[in-house]
Length: 316
Length: 320
Image (cartoon, rainbow over all chains, first blue to last red; front, side):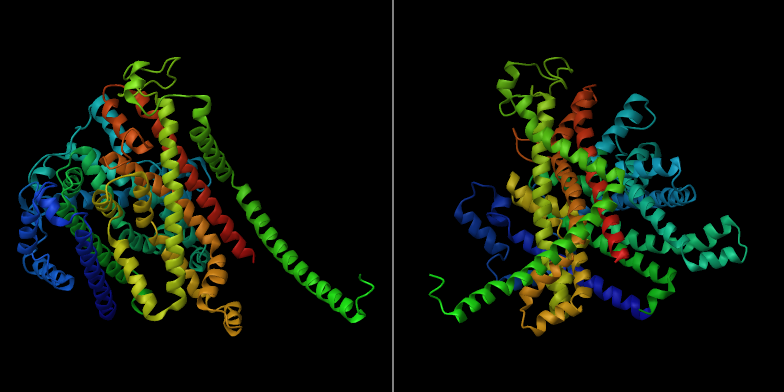
């Protein structure tokens, strides 16, 4: 078990190192370089030269990468936003917790809804309920996320006024949680896609579990339908869902970007889309790096949980 | 002339002509039989799946609608000022404009066709690029194994852990959006899954007898990968390409929503929707529902087809 966790952490570290290198390279392929991005298209060659030498852009690449890594580890240096005139890490610091709250609540909510839905589909397989839910989940993950969000706003906030149009605008996590009515629609819209795909997986995972020998054994020993379903099938069917959770994290975090933009939720995703329109590349690279770190750590936790849940993993 | 030829030469000619004939006959016959059988079996399973047939129908309909539609329903889709001369902004559906007009005075039905061309083109082209990169990457990685495999797969891991939309936005901002670049960028972020799948299959294919036979006969690594391994992963590839197509259309839509879609006056379904939803709050429902229906229908159709093909290929493998 310990060996497995150490190996898995090692893998995560390699991936993280790779991501920092990717972000570093992306910063270097901006046409015209960072100097043009910072000083504008009409900067004089003299100013560009000074900017470049002040920021060490004349050093060899490996040296620059080393400096970048050191800055990152020592002082969380993610660069400087020329638009906000503020360090990127302080911008992200204010917004990351809110995004994590949004992603966290939505993921938990999605699991709570998707698992019973999947079980229901297995119990009522090839009945109308199954078909309706299958159809709904197909539409769920075929619909552009922003369209779903906007339609939710249109129906539930403008037509019948149950919920607010906008997400809570508080500066802190506490302030955001204090306004649950405004949180309903963002969470619904972010979890819809996850519910659609998780309930599909849950259905097929449960179906497969039901065909296993241990189910027949349980049946032969006279266990009742509900006991078989929840004690024998469900516990085994949940195992792949834990892995799926880790694998889906990048998609969920990406989805948060759209959801935040639709509902004007003051998180990291909104920061990113606003920076995209202002061509503020340092912010884009910073949020990309932080979002990736979050997903890497998230899938690491999911994988360790997986090993806790399923003893077979520890020995392979 | 033939009389003048020595008999030996005639025999040789005949032999030369004769010998390969049955050889090629059996070869082509055999291949035709096997692929025919495979294709037929595939078709049998595929056609049992009613949803997949509906999916194929929907795709054919939309391809014809978007690319041939403008021939029968000609509208101005390139010059907003011109369009405005002959219509009004935000007009509701009428006989002149079946689906109404948008804020620039463009006819929405024509715009759905025009934007659909972009969305479908980007979808097909990006899926093709992603598949080519992914398949070659995966096959090479799986075939050579060892350090090559470890390094190539860690690179895939790195890209896979970056939330796709973030990477897509960074690339779209750095390289500015134009249609060919959007295709390249979407293709570039979508190749990871096929790379992993093909690598997995390659690992099991490379130890098969026929690969060893090619090796014994002196076949190069390149030959093995391109002639023997990749063709045998075709099932996985085709199924996955269908899903990438669906995803690529949605990714383009997301970019359009953020404001990084194709530049005006060109458009795609995502940019149309993004513009439409802003105005839908004013009650201009015709600016979202036709486009929304089109994009959901096409993506659902691709997902149906992909699911059915996966079943078909899996069943084929089970029966074999």
